Image 1 (tube, rainbow, N blue to C red):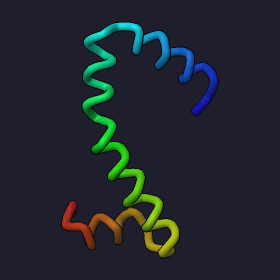
Image 2: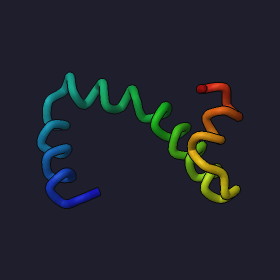
Image 3: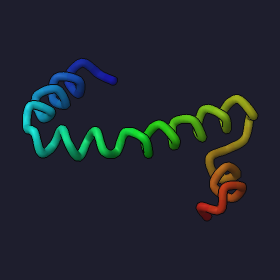
Length: 56
């Protein structure tokens, strides 16, 4: 992440409601990141990954 985005995110996370929502999304973000990583390691495109996972 860029430094400016990191600063913005940290500032926003000072708000308890935003922090709660952000933390609630972390498992979903971790799963998506893992899927992207596996796709890249396998050499398949995002479009092919979406087809294989039933997203498209």
